[in-house]
Image (cartoon, rainbow, N blue to C red; front, side, top):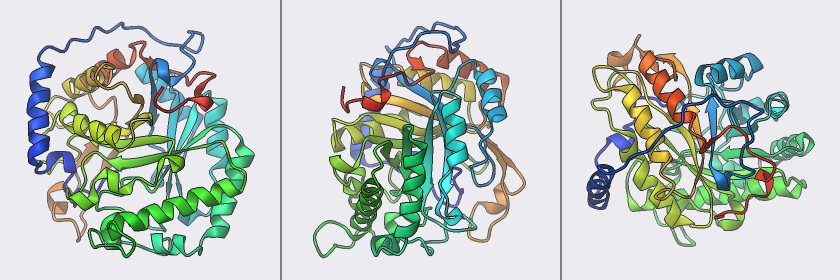
Length: 393
């Protein structure tokens, strides 16, 4: 999702000692990395492997409007023509403030031969980051105040019937969304053990998953979706603290963004934002497949070359010997104009300027993306065995 520049993006902030050592070792290893690409335009007629075990599902969020839910076939096909490949996953949002299940979006996506990835976000209008908990707070979810809506949403998912990936309350280890652990006691000790922020989140997650399953819903695959580096980057806020248990999670996922705003003071490469969070998730649960739920970077030529950044991203992801659990990657294709905001210390610098994360923000960016995604390892369809994918296989 689009981030407000108020908050320091974790991969561009200060790093702890273990991470620094990790990145130094990684940098040395990358010197010998070489990936050969086969440039070809994939089509629906080209046979693909039957499960993500044979490759990495490619997907995208495609600038579906202010609420991120205006899914249209025209936008999907336009993106696919740009990149030269059908998308195995199409991402969009479902906000609790709308009090509905996105039936039309799910059906359109499925008819197109793609798997819907839904960011199911418990907040209310105006859907503005940094405001803190609202009527859909984690505590109110736990108390059962929204069970009727959860049941309604679950019934919509059951009637849809197809496989649907659900990222509920994403990036909870950041500080920008109202469901962030920071807003629920953070690192304070919880009465039953652990830390109050993560324990509250886990209780809400389990309540939602249990409630959906009680409606007989078996087609939802639950994605625990974190930010790449925790913010604040403290022990209580690490990924392991938010893990609700193997029975409650089908996929582990995270977001990776390079520079997004004109005010960003440097341009971190992809691997420095990807390697440690990937490793962290494999340590949380080595049996689960990993999804790069969101990845992108802005077009800021004075800071860095976006084409090189994208090329590095595909080279990194394609290194299956080093990253064998990565089974899906969803690109965030959006452009927006930044506006002044009184709570944003960078607002005046960014106001009126654009953040262009689109794949076609420049010829070099588009060329790098088309070349990278054309590699056979990046799958254009989920395959017949996707629904029965065994974690860790």
